[in-house]
Every structure is written in C-alpha cells, then in structure tokens.
Image (cartoon, rainbow, N blue to C red):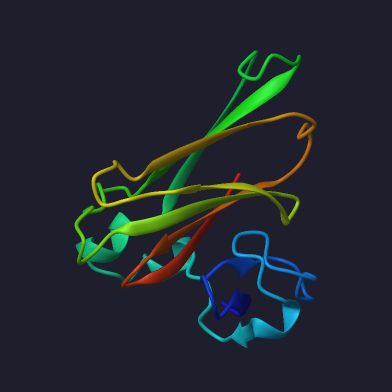
Length: 145
C-alpha cells in the first residue's frame, strides 16, 4: 500500500502529508517520498510463503500502572506469526507505534534482541492503534488494532 517514507531512516508516516520533520531521525519533510509499496499488510501475507509470515506485528494493549500515571496503557508488539530471525544480515530494525495514525513512539532493535517492542502511553482510549515493523530486507509491515 502507498505510504510516505523517510528516505534517511525508513520511518513510515501514516498521514497524507509529510511531517515537518521525521520523528525518528529529525530529517526535514522534503526527504519523505510517497512509495507505492511503502507498507505491507495482512492481505500481503495471504498468498505469501512462510518467510513473509515472520513480519506482521501482533499487538496487545494492557491497561495498568506502568508509567506511574492512571490509567496508562502498555502497547506491546511481537513481530511475526513465526518468530522473525534476528541476525546482522536479516533483522527487524524498528517497531513504531501510532494512535489514530499519529506517531506516539518507537523501539529500536539490534540483532541480539527478540523482535518484540513495547511502550507505555496515556490517553489512547477509543483510538485505533497501529504498529509498523521495519525489516532491513523486506520493508515495513503494518498491523492495526
């Protein structure tokens, strides 16, 4: 699916116009490009092989007191129906979190880590949660809750 992608760091912007600056690397809006295949979704795995099933984020949200404020929510994302490999040659680089298509945070990963990320946020009641996983080989994958 079409998406605005930062040409510096690969961040995918879910809104129709580029942000003033990339929330991940700080690059200016002029480095964002509209890519026809900027995001892959669950429909892209229906006909895919086993390797593609390693990229889709699985999202859970739990209400708790994780950041000292009430109520707050821990949004967790595990990448892949089948665990994604995490090697220097092939890995998930970043997991980005959104509420109603607005960037709310990200987790950077290294090959030594499991492909799982979490953030703690407030004020997300009744909002659509989206998560994008960035694979260094297979691009960005979107799930929504």
